[in-house]
Image (cartoon, rainbow, N blue to C red; front, top):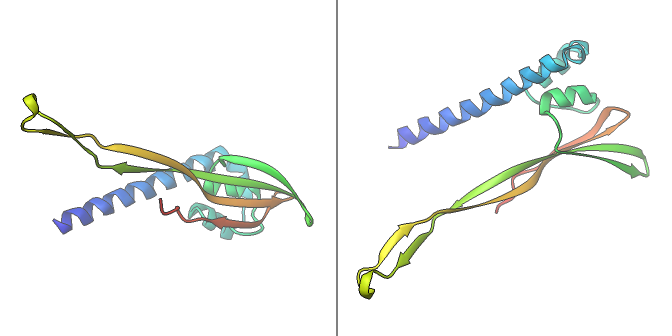
Length: 143
């Protein structure tokens, strides 16, 4: 039983990684000229879906995709553009509905699971002059 659960988890993880890398390939094709201008080191980072300070916005787009939200922020050090990446987290809640049976005898139980979803900020990147000045990955909240 444990082996089956392990193999299922492994297959799901491989599928998720495969989907992420295929998205990177699509974005590389979409912005091929910008990708070609990257140094070999930056290309390697982008191919792994990683970003670092000094990258331009095209490299971040290829590595992480389109941001969920973009905002301009005035700071004492100068204007910044902040890209936010939001994710959706869904939780399944088991629920059994117990109803009285005919004539009040022999209650019936029906399984009626419910779900609830939340959106949370999973990452952000700050740019100044089209270059990354700082960024952060955030953990999923413990809902």
